[in-house]
Length: 491
Image 1 (cartoon, rainbow, N blue to C red):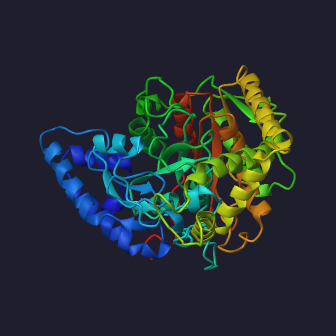
Image 2 (spheres, helix red, strand yellow; image 1 turned 135 degrees about the horizontal axis):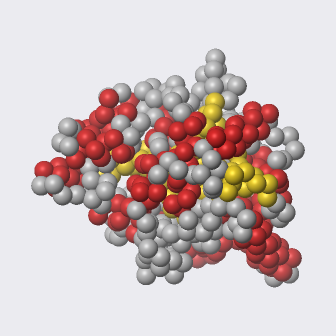
Image 3 (tube, rainbow, N blue to C red; image 1 turned 30 degrees about the vertical axis):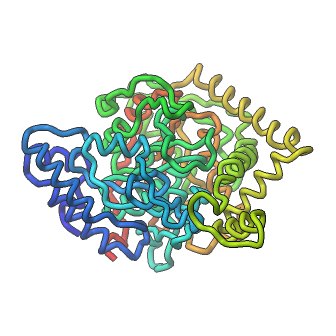
């Protein structure tokens, strides 16, 4: 690996502005890293020529003392974000060779700020998964391994390609999406920082939809500062997205003051689940001690409807998925499998184009929306969702942030849980309530498991208060001093 690939986003930005390095040099170093780490299957489409062109344009701007906050920074883009003239498939066979003629708002914001596109990143098909094993292009391999064990591990999902690429130094930062934990969980599994902003903070326009009331774009980076820089670029109000909220985007990096004295941190008792591994419990306690030492006040809080979050999520999300994915019919674009009539063509195209997990969720979603079951399942799940949001509102009357584990375990082996959907869904137990309530959350690498794998801690914030979230996460990151490196960075 080149020394250039070990630069954080903020360090690379400083060196580019000081003209210590060029954007082309930085892009070339990461293109080389992409090739060296190809065995991780993190990138599914490389855009090397485009990257060099964009880097040259950045160098021209930087030479004149111009450029945006991401000028010359090589990034990867999750394959859910439509990229003009660059293939976008949501890691699904059904989208085939779909090449958008338009750009998602999030990526358009980043290109306007000078970011350089290295390629499209693998993900679970239509973002449906917690391990990045459901992709049509095959599973992503976590660059971390257990001590004394060469079993290939999952990077988490659905943004596994984004997390693995950042952890392996194949890109400086990456875009990701989070519907039930798909930024924070893979960040925890790969020793990276994953930031899920408030619902409505980033535009969903031009991003392939999974569950429209839950999906939210955010960054995966190596540091909290880098996440703050990325989110400032990605976020914006967008008239093309009816769920986009018209609030100003702060200069998030300025929030990293290092001072959290007097900040009130809630510890939700319902997250202390039965059977929680001792090392997860110990890490959580360590996080509490770090925040205490920095001057924060610790308060116990209660979120009584937390136990219903996961089952309610797995009604709401599949219901919305079944509606959103109805547009993939083999007629207008993507895969088309012939049949004797139009109904048979629909059925054949969808049966061959969608993978098992996507089909499972479409079936669940269609069932809970069907006549006779809508009230019993979907409507009840939405009522539970309202109660979950009220729990958080009541808790935030007393505290500023909450601290929880990000995941119940460290990364597991590829193939270990894929045959057990319920076990797989439980990976999201600490993350889904944040999506159900539309709140911001961030996962910070905070420790190493007994077998040498990264573990993350999650901070949850108030709506549109990402600044406080970043401020506390920065303090915790410094206290954790996580410096361990993945074993497969250059293999």
